[in-house]
Structure formats: C-alpha cells, structure tokens
Figure 1 (tube, helix red, strand yellow):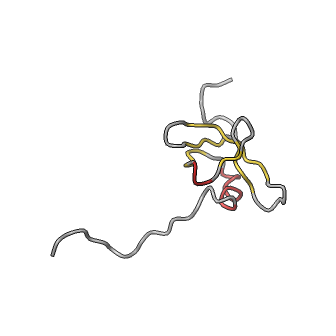
Figure 2: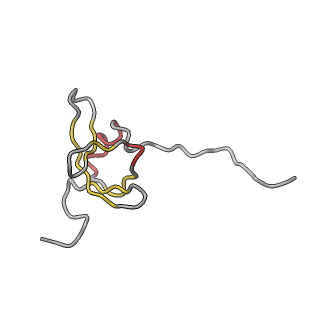
Amino acid sequence: MTDDPHTGSALILASDGGTLQRLTLVSTVTGTGAVLVDAAGIPVNPWEVELRHWPPEAEPALRRGGYLCDRSPDLELWCNCAD
C-alpha cells in the first residue's frame, strides 16, 4: 500500500470546489458514452466537478462524456481600458 494519491492507473480525482473526491468511470447503458460515479454509485454531472487527475487511457471516454472539453483560445484581444 502507498500513500501516493495518484497511485493506480484507473484513479480519477475531481474537485467540486471544496472537496477532492475519487470517482469511477463507467460505461453508459447504451455503451456509447461514459459517466463518472462517486463511491456510492451516484452519477456525477460534468458541470458539477473539475477533473484534477485521470489516466491517459480514460481521456477519450471522458471527452465523450463531457467531462473534458477542448477550450480553444480566444484569438481576439480584449481590452478593458478607457480610450
């Protein structure tokens, strides 16, 4: 046993803004997506958490489930200054 919280290839850590929790990735009934569930088996919505750590092999499923999204940088500069 180790004290390293990142040990384990399937470990997914997420924050809800106040608590860091371990989540498990499970396939949906249709098999077309995936959902994260907490220790009690309750599904966690993508907008409720921010992922902090996940295994690289889970990334495609997390993207399909909406937990990871590509943020394209805003190329237009914005200034909040008075002219």
